[in-house]
Length: 294
Image 1 (cartoon, rainbow, N blue to C red):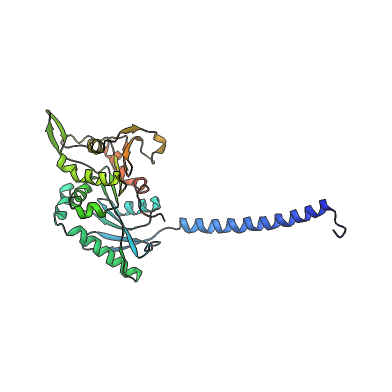
Image 2: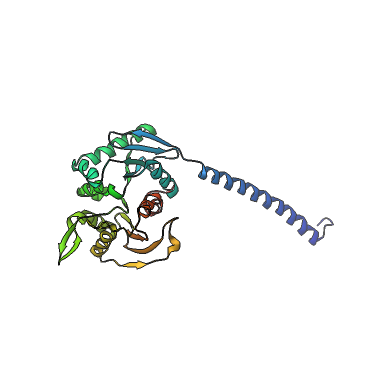
């Protein structure tokens, strides 16, 4: 050992390894810091006005294997929807569609059975132009808040879209009229028929369906609680009480129900503010979709 004792040699080797490990740790920390900074860098959205709605393309968006993943959102303040998409950590181009009025204002345009297809085609053409190559449809997520369900209900009447939509998010947004049954008000089955058909697909794990609801009681028509219960009954699925610790800010999760690809989340609150929180925190529902992660 050239006159170096074993204990001293071990100390020298240990010191050298320590310096090397400290350097590796420093470089790893630098890399982690750079990645975190990149992840937290503000995402800028480029807006393109479409014949119907607006397309918002995130600055970090990239086609996935020549496919365009798309989220179409009905009835939502665009900055709020955009920020929720970012918070969800999901990667998709975004189309936001707003009409003046209640659910009928959303339903009427989509009585034109070609309209939804035109929206998708226009969005995909623009995304193809921006990416410099022809893109096909990737994941297709549809979401609505409040009155936006009127558009979704018309779209789901078409089997083509019931089978092509991969994810459906209804943020306090599944309403229906009443019919009389045994002398009492009951959810009009015609108004939830196609939502149930989609839920059955999701229950077979062919799609994902996320339904959130408040405790509002409209009175003249079925509430989102009643329609959610109707959905669960159709699937023969139960509802369970759950812990509020899983709640987003300003909300209190009270129940969960579902079956495989269907999740129904019931939140406490019956005020307009409670209703609006389903839009403000729709990121929590978007996290549960099959859209790819950023």
